[in-house]
Length: 175
Image (cartoon, rainbow, N blue to C red; front, side, top):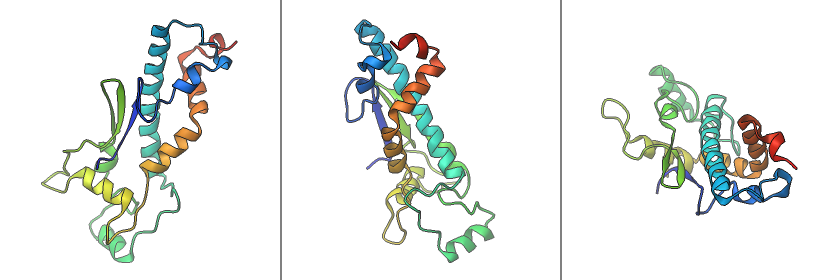
């Protein structure tokens, strides 16, 4: 199992711009398909960047999606004795800085590269992130990626309007 999110321009489980591109509110219906595809590609890239920013921000501010279970007292003491961050999802900033976005075919991928390891032979970063997201038999789940995806899906229209606004097309594309 991997820990990433695919945002697809052409096909796939989540094509975030498709329901919006044909919405008459935005006046894009009459654009040639090539122009629509270009806008969808730009929007998908925009969303992937916003998703990465939101993931990092939620770790930094300790936004507790679904009220994360606090760290155990023994683990808090361990982190303190090693000079590590007391935050959930963060001991050093290595995992947070490993969250990336890249394009693969028609998809933009947001996640942690699968073969990345902590420095000095430490564990696989993706394995640590999966353990945090889904829990282990010794550690409760503290979901981050799932709640961020659900939040962005619920607010995709807001992101669409922000995208159009930042792109400079918002007024000209509305009817």
